[in-house]
Length: 447
Ligand code: ATP
Ligand code: MG
Image (cartoon, rainbow, N blue to C red):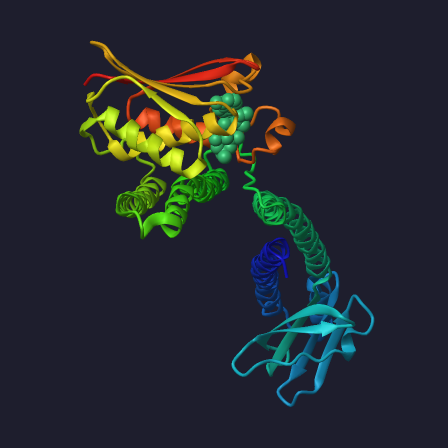
């Protein structure tokens, strides 16, 4: 049974019970009042009759008096102490066949005469002959019956109209309550089917519980979506960032396997590089995990480092890994206050692009002035068209998918580079000419 039916059923039953109780109460009250009025009226008439009877002395007059006091629908019976009929007058045929039954100690009775209520009042009277008799005055309550019938009709109509109204209002109420719930259910199953995080339309200035439920639902969906995106981003970022260090480790390991054991210098360099890269990877993963959890952009560990030496060792790793010409211009040491691991990560991303999208040598230049340090990485590759430049930092954006297919990649590098640069408060600038080459400047301001 759905919610709408439950609301409907509950309110209908409730209305039925309340209306029935009310109507029965009204009916009983009215009936009692009507009989009460009739009783008082008849009782007065009987008293008057008895007073009139006490003033006469022969039986013929008595019959006349009885005829005068006879109710318009009814009759009067006089019986003696042996219950023998002394006299009977009636205005409706057949009343003489009716014998009232009195409860013990009661002087009145309400019975039925041909289906109509009939009221009888019985009182003792000293008869004209001096004997004690009993006068039974009977009155058929036709009007009361009619009124009660009419009341029954009215109460029944009230009940029917009430139930109809209640049905209409409960159906409307059911709709008002269940509509947003149905919307919610539909949205949820749609989200489940499509794998997206659908939201529901909430009335802009709705303040009731239903609107609040909608707002809470939308907020929950938003959170879920954010968490899902964060997770997804973590996984893709992690796999992107591990590619280069893994390639470096692999190449050093191969170098070690080829010559390492006979050449102590090579062996030392290789082992050291592998140890360094592994440590770096470990730290990088921890950092990314922390970032994914907290979304704190200011995760960084600043210290005074020799940038020149950092670039030199990074280039050395790239040379070993990809067997390409990586040239370094400039003179060290050049000190800066920055995060060593994150700057290295940034260099890796840009150097990786430079070697991927060019075939000639790659030239890195480090310059220092009073404002800060600029590391420029130049390649003579295919360049980036001007229309694509503004999108280079978007996640998953790749210039001309067909051209890039052979190089492989996900289009994440530059987006991550932008995040890292932001954390380091460094600036990235790209200059590129198609078919000539690209130069990317990393500017690290003095702090
Ligand atoms: P990923 O780095 O995720 O493996 P990717 O290298 O394609 O993939 P990004 O590093 O974000 O992604 O670079 C985005 C796009 O910018 C690249 O697809 C490429 O078209 C262009 N691009 C970036 N650097 C250069 C460059 N030095 N020369 C030419 N095009 C470049
Ligand atoms: Mg890249």
